[in-house]
Every structure is written in structure tokens, then in C-alpha cells.
Length: 142
Image (tube, rainbow, N blue to C red; front, top):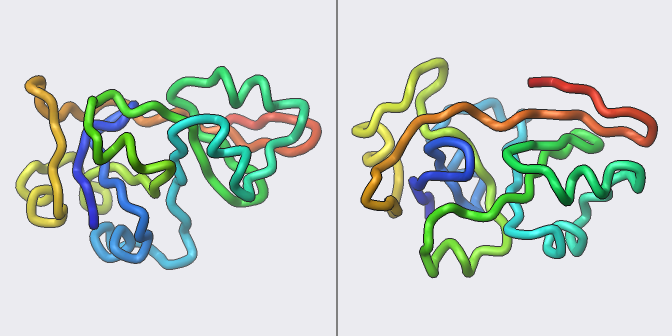
């Protein structure tokens, strides 16, 4: 299932099925999606190995995506109080728009299975910061 919701950064599609997201976004199969974890403990149980030097930075980061060994991830608490979102330990995330276009509510409603929004609605905000980490340095990509 694909969920349209307000993420910690912007309006996004989230799903645990990256193939469905690739179909919606018409994305190249070689380009991976960001994997979003609900907390640092869940991240540490998965196969993402954060260099020791940057663990504290990752733990304290907000609205920041990290790339380690070509795998992108972010730790983010969902801003909405939804039981469905609380039950998900992780999900793939992508901005809710067509390729090279702005957010379009009609397009998003057609492509999503579930819509979760607060009384404030869905707001397109800036995307997360993006850093590549290796054992010795942190490189800003976005």
C-alpha cells in the first residue's frame, strides 16, 4: 500500500513496497529510495552501518538524510498522530509529485491507497538535507 502523508519535511508517498513507489514516480530502477526509520534503535538493528565517528550526529539530526555505501536513510518521527504510521518501523519515502513537477493534489490522490492528513492539510515544504558519510568525512550533497 502507498500512503500519502505529511512527512517530517514535505508531502510524501511512503510505502514498504519500493516497486509501487517506482511505478508511481516512474523512476529508474537503479535509483534507490530513502529508507526512513522511526527511531535510532530500529536503524541500528537493520543493516545500515553508520561510521562510529558520525553516530552521534545521525542520532541528533533532524530533517537530514544520510548516504552510507550508496544506501540512503533518515531517522524521523512522524509529525502525525496515526496508529498506522506508529506501527511501521520503517518505510521507503519519496516526495509526492511527478517527475520534475510540483506537488499536485489530484495526481497524489489518484496514486495513493491511503491519505493521512491533519486538519492543517498537506504542505509542500523544503526537502531534507543530504550528506554522504564515509569513515573519515561528511560531504554535503543537498
